[in-house]
Image 1 (cartoon, rainbow, N blue to C red):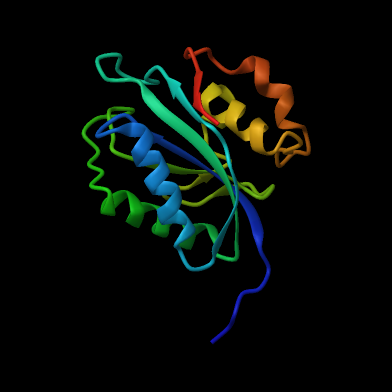
Image 2 (image 1 turned 90 degrees about the vertical axis):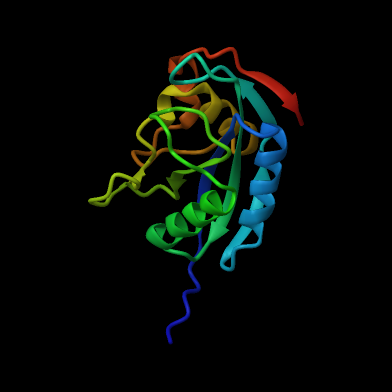
Length: 168
């Protein structure tokens, strides 16, 4: 059996707007910390934002965590989807309500587009969402994109969804 020893810094976005969303995000961070092969490095504050999709739903609680892992992207995704399933996530509509949503935002400075609708790295919407950019910059202010440009250059391009910090 081969043991992987090289690690990668990964940014994971978390979001919830059902069943005490702030608590769901906190519990999901704890669940991720318990995955073999993942080491939590930093967690952002939790932010409240208006829904990205349909407006007939509650506001979201969002956060971003920085983890270090030796898991390849596909294995990391499977672990995150397992946590979503354990939390009882059911996809009812695109950008709709959810108990928990876990997205790989950045996997180091890699660009990965595997032939699956679930894995695009960087995340396809990462540069347009304030509930991604602001928490990422809070915990990794010098984060660089795969092309080498600083993420902070995109802070002004994200849409305003009335982002409010609700805890530090």
